[in-house]
Length: 134
Image (cartoon, rainbow, N blue to C red):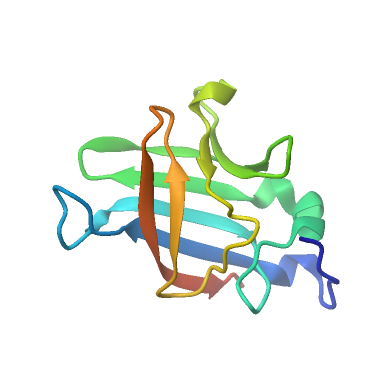
């Protein structure tokens, strides 16, 4: 989705925190499993594709899980327009975690998004916070 950018692209950078929503094995979800990522996000909570092109080197992701070491990578725009998390250490596109319709989702606290993991599992995460970077 293209949106006109009225302010400096850097001021649009937001830190978004996603935490695992409830699922079998986690009836209350989990605060210790999720993602922190930085991307240009509009005031209404949508990722701004135009600003992303200027800021993609600053669009980072950290995947955290209580049973595994953190993974650090980048937020990327894939062919076909989907958004994904690409982990630098893998360097393999088959290991990317693709968001389900992230281009149309709103990143505002309380909303839910789905991420397809490399093993094919689709997991749901709750948007816990969206903070503007200084």
